[in-house]
Amino acid sequence: DTGVSQNPRHKITKRGQNVTFRCDPISEHNRLYWYRQTLGQGPEFLTYFQNEAQLEKSRLLSDRFSAERPKGSFSTLEIQRTEQGDSAMYLCASSLIGPYQPQHFGDGTRLSIL
Amino acid sequence: AQSVTQLDSQVPVFEEAPVELRCNYSSSVSVYLFWYVQYPNQGLQLLLKYLSGSTLVKGINGFEAEFNKSQTSFHLRKPSVHISDTAEYFCAVFSGANNLFFGTGTRLTVIP
Image 1 (cartoon, rainbow over the protein chains, first blue to last red):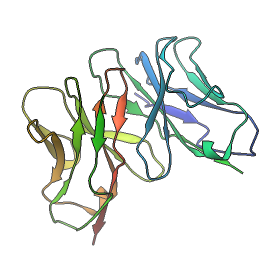
Image 2 (cartoon, chains in turn brown, red):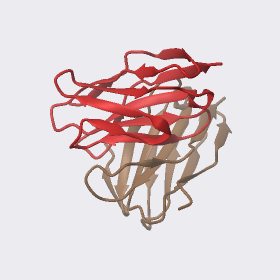
Image 3 (cartoon, helix red, strand yellow):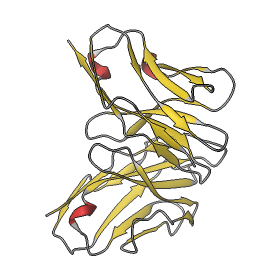
Image 4 (cartoon, rainbow over the protein chains, first blue to last red):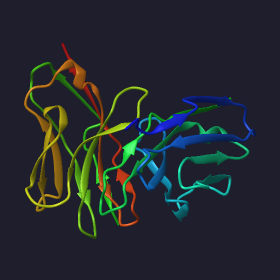
């Protein structure tokens, strides 16, 4: 069990650029979640996958945000045309399928928009 | 709808003293509650969870929490804190949409 891995750990970019983050879940976990955490707040749910199917995406913050998990393993979160307000920590978590299985979190990707 | 309120944004406490971090919830469905800890520049680590059964739940690092349905609370306690317990603590409720809904967090600072 190597844990949930997120890359990069920190991304600095100019406003208007596109960014992509990667998450590698724990290998036997079928579910994968993305959260956003802003300063002084708890994580805010964005979307989740069960295997390759995206089962909930209504919480994505705008149509600039999209996520994929093409082969049911790793996932990517893309933000297009970044804005100042997108600066935050983006967290990935994974879990087994089943009622209320605990979610295991990665260390996050911190996005800074200049 | 589910929501979580963490009443204290910051809690300073002296080393080896007891601590209680408060959490109140509201939920229109069955309640499943969690406490996570976040150390600086890291992700969240599960401390403990309440799904059903005994209302007193024991977790890692000597923490425990008590589910109180009548008071809609799930307070976290530790009888004697260490310097290494300094961190941010989040209470969360499991949403029917298969995701966690988090409180705003409580920063625990242990003073030597």
